[in-house]
Amino acid sequence: MFPKIILSMSLGLGFFTLIPIAFTTAKFEPYALNGGLVSAVAGKDYVIIASDTRMTDGGYSIMTRDYITSRIWDATGVSSSASSSSLDGDDNDNGNGNPYGGGLNSDGSLVIPKKEASVPASYEIDENDINEGISIKTSFTQCPTFIASAGCASDCEALKRQMRSEISAHKYWNHGAGTLTPSGIANLLMMTLYSRRTFPFYSFCILAGLDASPSPSLDEHGDEDENENEDGNAHVHVYDAIGSHERVAVASAGNGREMLQPILDRLFATGTEAEADGEIEIANSKKSKLNRDDRAIHPSEQRVGLKLLPPVETYVKCNEREAVGMLVRGYRSVAEREISIGDNVVVCVLKRHWRGTGTTRFETEVLRFPLKKH
Image (cartoon, rainbow, N blue to C red; front, side, top):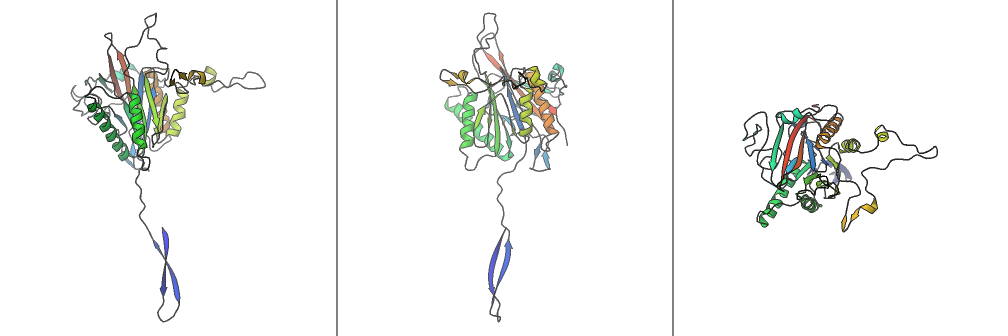
């Protein structure tokens, strides 16, 4: 609001007066923060991606409590075999109104299970909770790559449509011969976001996927050789709004990220028992010794041939059941303190299954856990 000065002359008096008049101008607001807290965890042979389902108008008004359309979506457009488990409905629609079968809608977004799962305080998820109809399982012959985005819902939806269109065109250019790898999709997402740097998508993204690598080599005992791939087959990349990204083991973005990220870092830390109890190891009376982060990689070990590894390990060392339990625990902690986070957290677990014939299949499992409904 800027005051405008109007010069006027009073008739017959012969003097000038200054009259301030205030004009209001419309303020251009192209963005709206619709909330959303997304996160991902990379394991050795699995990835987990999660989001809450509350959508707000940027304030205290809740627009919907079951929004997932542009929060978590498959970027590759791979087809599923629609082998899923559900308590309600038949095998064709999985009881969730999805005529395409499986845990994905036709636009690549996740199908939210109708029933809620529960996580005990011991991190572990009961096996019955996974299999008694509260999860949706889907099998794929090609590995899907998921992207989670939070921020302005319209920008997230526009980004989803543009990414899926680009990857679909790439598949047809190659006569349907497979899809991009997670690293290729990560670079494509980076270029897409950076191309809009002058008027960016108000979308904070996380990418999660698995390398479609051949069957693992076995050691002398017949077990999988853990040293074959030092940085793991799981990829998790976290982005800002203009495409800068980093490959990490645990990532979060969106509203409440400042609270969720340190919680997940602490829960997934692989420190000593003294660190877990909040103690500092005292070497002697003159100085204290702080234990080094167990996930940090020494600079001399970061370069392998022409490949430069990240400065930290890019996967966690727990199994997917423990990871889901810790992830949900983190969301429940944030939901107690952030008004825009709540209602439900939808978790998608992507795993690889090796077959004796040398082929692999990928399976997603979608679960829904309750959060605080304030």
